[in-house]
Image 1 (tube, rainbow, N blue to C red):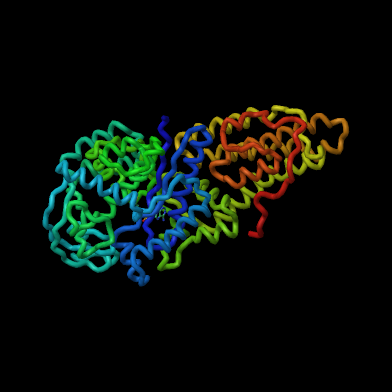
Image 2 (cartoon, protein in one colour):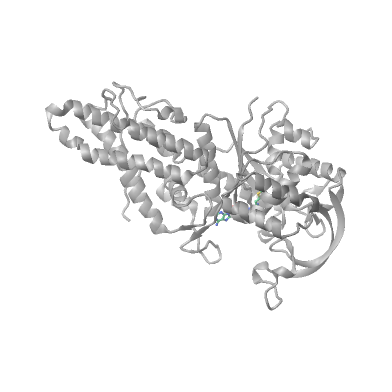
Length: 518
Ligand code: MSP
């Protein structure tokens, strides 16, 4: 059996509606998943929801629902959102599912039996909003805590702790020896800086059920539930277990899972996450895995945060982008294009409506849309839609874009790949202007030349459809349909020049990105 390319996203807290940041991360992961399928690999793409913990319990309370009712109602919206984004996820985890909860408990039992946990009392200042104990380092110069922590109360609590002390050194070595483990580099340096300049404190992995009961009970002490992060991170292996991945099942000594469908997923190839949750993924998660006896994920790919108009996205100030409204007005592919083209994976991004409209107009409507529409319309008008004899004037340009796109996608350089693809769009649009097929059509002595030009344009459109498939899935299919092709643009091997055969009759051209008054 061949191990699949396994890619995950962070699982979102289900304490509100999805926003731009959530959408961006899921689209990034989807493009990488689709790209690897186009490269011919078997892929498993996992996304889902983080449903336990204080944030969700409080949101449910405010909504006068039980946490489960609240999660069920919102999960339907989030699932619909994943569909709206046309994510090609192979499963959708909800951490309240029995398949996940049982696996978390199996892991907890195993680590407890192996002596990785201990029980201790702790007295400190607790922020319910941040679900964390604060230390003196969190105090402002005047000794108070920032209002963003909400109400801070002093608590004395018994809890279970995960011993981390002995783990710091190997993790530092691992990060140093494996530069691609955390990408981009500056995020890796951040983790290394943190590990080298701080002593890791043991991780509190429980919450007293008396204070917070919306969680997975500790299998060895029913007075406690599992800390939400310990629960959430395990989704990356509980779902492989549910699909019969032998490696994680063995690590948990667990019988959970459907033994009939055995697929190999672990170790994950990529965890796509935002910069705010790096420590959980690059420090706690590797340590959890090591103590379970499991290999580490191959890569943690860290994206930046979106702002809007240079300010934090925030519901309370009304500074938000409504992904669904944008998609309904401009189409999904326009939304996917903007976020991927505007922001590379790593730095922070800034959404502006003007920037969105200008990319729509320049790159989609006037760039790609115009190229495909005029190429196919001329083929229709001058040759009844019948593909002429192959010609390869643009084949080198197409091959360059295809090679670059493939190479860049293997390195998760989505923005650069789009730039390369648009290099071909621009080249082909210039080719129309230079060869002026509308003039050639008026001159009977130029019949052969016109055939050549029309072939080059139609075939370039086809290659573009293949290269664009991971990014703009609907547009890619539309181009194939307008070319009258029943084959699928799903494999990059189809990007080879010359697959459009002479005599083939194309379909109906139609604008891909209707121009809007902006
Ligand atoms: N539930 C945890 C993740 C657990 S993963 C085992 C969580 N949830 S979250 O809903 O707060 O965030 C989910 C993802 O969305 C994170 O990767 C986070 O970085 C990302 N984003 C949230 N707001 C964002 C922006 N404004 N911009 C880009 N991504 C952002 O953390």
